[in-house]
Amino acid sequence: MSNTKNCRVCNNPIEPFMSFGRMPLGNGFRNPNNMSKEYKYEMKVAVCSQCSTFQLIEQPSPEKMFHEEYAFFSGTSIRMQNHFADFSKDILNEIGNDDPFVVEIGSNDGILIGNFAEKGLRHLGIEPSSNVAEVSRKKGINTKVSFFSKKISEEIVDQNGAANAIIAANVICHIPTINDIAEGVSNLLVDDGIFVFEEPYLGDVLDKTTYDQIYDEHVFLFSLNSVNQIFDRVGMEIFRAQRQWTHGGSMRYWISRKGKRAIDESVHKLLENESNQRILETETFIKFKRQCEDQKYKLRSILEDLRAKDKRVVGYGATSKSTTILNYCGIGPEHIEFISDTTPIKQGTVTPGSNIPVRPYSEFQNNYPDYALLFAYNHSKEIMQKESNFEINGGKWIVYVPEVKII
Ligand code: SAM
Ligand code: TMP
Ligand code: ZN
Image (cartoon, rainbow, N blue to C red; front, side, top):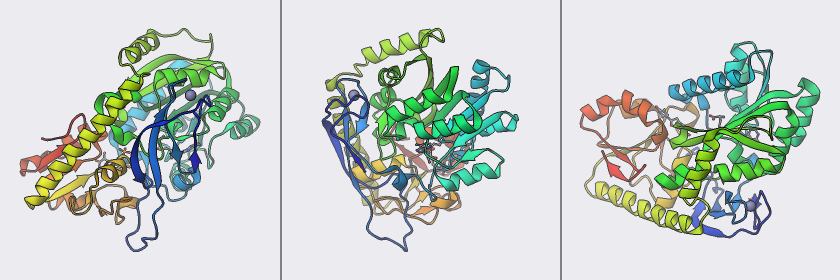
């Protein structure tokens, strides 16, 4: 457990502005036949007044979250597969095809780095969760089962040489030792190399009140402002920023050593947006807290109302994010019959803290409920397209992003 009174980036003292209460692990799905005491921590959040980094006060240890039974497999969404294929093309456009060496941090089942492996390019995925790493190895992708760190970067340089590009998606915000990661990145890159990573974007979380992006794995929620300050410490800077539709609103940061690349207009624009959005001001987070409480009240009211009317409600997508929603809003099996999910390792388990059964997709498809609560809203385009029959049969969706409503 890392429990801090000081900012993980700049060591300035930090104070929480909000607590979501005691929380289990976001991906801590449990076997209903083995319900030993569940691990919990208090989910408090703070924003550093000096470097603007949004962070958890307490975070469970990495080994508790990432291990041989990690429940999240990246390859479950077709749209994400396409997204990562495009990401790999953007990287090659930037660094060229002349025998590059590409390293991915948090490569999971190989959904991104696999695109380089397929082209026969030099590549390496770094992935500590051995079960997902094994899936990637079986596809012929070079994968090192390890947490990335400065020390690991030194080993890679010794064994494979320096990298032309380091890439990452939805993982840098997971790593509490962020300054060590920045040093490792700088150490591993060739002089004109690039580090490109994407993550859920704090600006979107504030805009859409997607507070479910806050859970144990996400020790940080980044803005361009905070990322710039983190990499400034190792002589690097953001030269491009690109919005992404993924995970309900993400940002892709392109980083190089200072002065190596022209700073794109997108960086100036985003800095201006963040200033207009008052992303650095205390008032913004007090308002965010009120919006979270309001959303909780509305979602609970809808579910209580449907329960009183004896309607069947099923959840769609047992996401790690939904752990925050379910536990913060006090939603349980009395509100939701089960949650449908296509990930085999999650099926037959119950959700962390809230104990709602997770069942295979066939149970949703073969017996449509009256209402489906869409937890996997970040895949809503893909899901709405394939679930038109549910609506034709009179089913209704309950959504909570960007606002709580029945559609
Ligand atoms: N990159 C994939 C994607 O976007 O779908 C996977 C994202 S998943 C939420 C985060 C992954 O990062 C997990 O597979 C986890 O095991 C891995 N991870 C966590 N900490 C890490 C670290 N310090 N170094 C490398 N990978 C890490
Ligand atoms: P994510 O929001 O972290 O990507 O997780 C999405 C979860 O939703 C994952 O457990 C797989 C599940 N899922 C389905 O059950 N059906 C679907 O059609 C999609 C796209 C995801
Ligand atoms: Zn700070």
